Image (cartoon, rainbow, N blue to C red):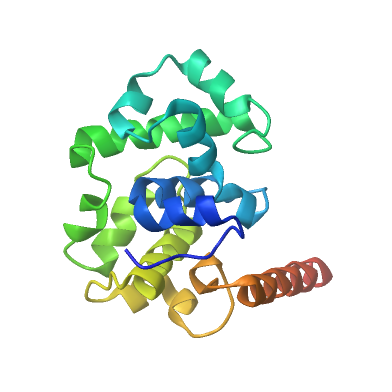
Length: 189
């Protein structure tokens, strides 16, 4: 996998670059939380658990896993609900993809199929799924036929989402874009 630079933390970025499940979890945690902190979630878990094995995470007692996820620094500002989502994602990766998260995208027949597969995961609505498919395409070269149509504007060049973050400068540009969108939505509503 190419080297990713999303969190500003060398160890967390290294894990994102080497472990596709960590990348998927980062995307899952990226809501109502700073993007770079969300993508550190997998690293926090691996330092506490010693692994990011989807089968082992899925099988853990939910209360025990919630405690691990809640230990400061927590994996998210809402560690209870997010720990349940992480376990739900781990269970699907285990049951439907044999524990190999890359099968989520390597076995997708098209961009539309990949989007549908990602949307089937807990916590992945259409927009989040589009962003993750765009991240896979732009940064990892995963480009099934029709991916651009499946992700809409997230396929365009620019600084719209985590898919466009490659360094500190691009992270700030994405942050600025998101603030502009929020301000425009607030002014319109």
